[in-house]
Length: 295
Image (cartoon, rainbow, N blue to C red; front, side, top):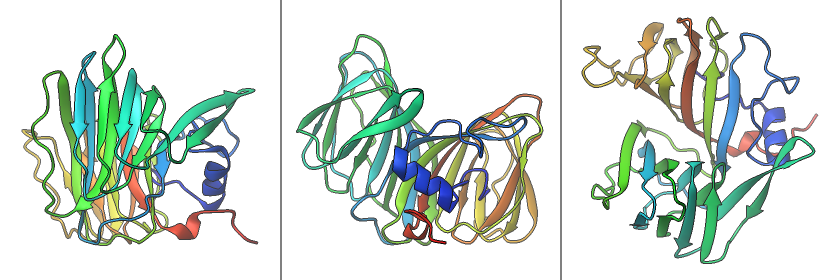
C-alpha cells in the first residue's frame, strides 16, 4: 500500500513544505486524472521527539457536543489533530504547532503558529501538533457539533484515557504496533479517495510504519513483501492476517477494516466496487524525503 497511502515523492514533499500541508487533491498536473486516486493531506508535522520502538500507532475521531470541554492529559508521545467540523478553543500547557489553511488566488497555502499563545482557536481545516508531555484542553466553542480526527504515536503498552466527559464521543478507528520508528520522522495524516476500478500497483518499500483505515468502499489489498496485518471489522467473520504475513497475499478491505504495515512493506490496492473508496492513512516519513531534492 506504499503508493496509495504514501504517494510522497521527493518533489511532492518539497511542494508540501513550500505551501504547507493543505495541498488538496494532488496529481502531477494539479487536477486529478480520470480513474486515479485523489490524495488530500489533512495534517503534517515534525515532532521534537518520538517514542522508541515498539510503538503504538492510533487513529480516532473525537466528536464534541456544543459547550463540551475535555482536558486531555499529557501523553508520552506526539499527537496530530485535524478539525473536520466546528470550532474549538484550545488551551495548551506548553508549545504546540498550529496550522491554519489559507487560499490565496485559488492556491491553498497555510499560516503557522509555531508556538501559539496559551489559548488559540481551531476551525474546520486547521491542524494541531501536540508534542509528548504537553497537556491540552479542547472546548467546543461553537453552537454546532464539532469533530477532530486524531492520530498519535505512543510507547507500546502506554495507558491511554478511557473515561471521557458527557458530550464527548470517542470512536477508535484503528491501532497497530510499529516494530521500528525512524527517528526525526514527520507525522502525516492523509485521506485518499479511490475511484471505481482505480489501482495502485506495488512499487517501492515503505520507509516508515503506516496505519490505514477504510472509511467507505472496498479495496483488494495485495501484500508482496514485508510484514503487515489486516484487521477486519468486529463481527465480520473474517479472521485477521497474521502479524508476520510475508509474501504474496490478497485480502479484501471493507469499511472498518484497518492495515498496519511495517518498514519495508511493498503492497498495492485496487478498488473492486462501483463506488469510490475512502481511506484514512497515518504514517511516519523519515527525513531523507524532506526538503528540496538535489540533482
